[in-house]
Length: 210
Image 1 (spheres, rainbow, N blue to C red):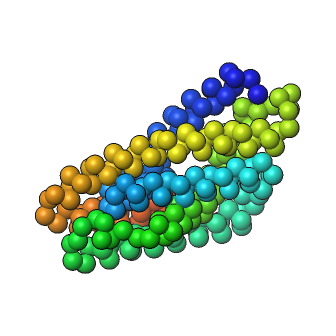
Image 2 (cartoon, rainbow, N blue to C red; image 1 turned 135 degrees about the vertical axis):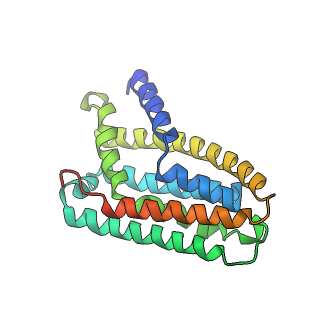
C-alpha cells in the first residue's frame, strides 16, 4: 500500500477516534469512576472488539448486518440491553456507602470483557468499518483481505492511543471530583444517564437503508 494512503488513513482514524462517540465516552466515564487502570483495560477490550469487526469486514461478514434487518436488530437489541444493565448498575452504586475508587474497582477480566461486549454488540461499528476501510484499499495494492487487516490494525493502534489518553485525563478529573463530598454519587448518576442514553440511541437506531 502507498505510504500516502496509510498516512491519510491514520489521520482520518485519529479524527474519528477523537470525535465524541459511544466508545470514548464509555472510557471517559469508567475511568472517572474507577481510575486509569479501569480505563486502560476497557480500552484493550474495545480494541479487541475492533479486531472482531475488522475480521468481519475482511471476510465479508459485516455485509450481513447491512443487508439483513433481522441480524442488525438482534445484535443492536443485545447491545441496548447490555448498556441498560450498565446504567442500572450505576444507579445502584448511588445507594452504596461512598468508598475510594480503588475499592469499587472490578476485576481485570470484568473490565476487559466490559469493553469487548460494549464494542462487538454495536452492529454500526461493523457497518462503519465496511464503509470506511475499503475507501483506502485497492486490488492493485495486493490482496484486499490483507489490506483490510492492515488498515484495521492501524485504526486499532490509533484508537488505543487516543482512548488511553482519554483514560488518563478522566482519571485526573475523577481524582479531583472525588475530593468533594458525595462526588461519587453524582458521577454514578451521570454515568447511569449516559449509559441509558446510549442504550436508547442504539435501540431506536435503524439499519442502513431502513
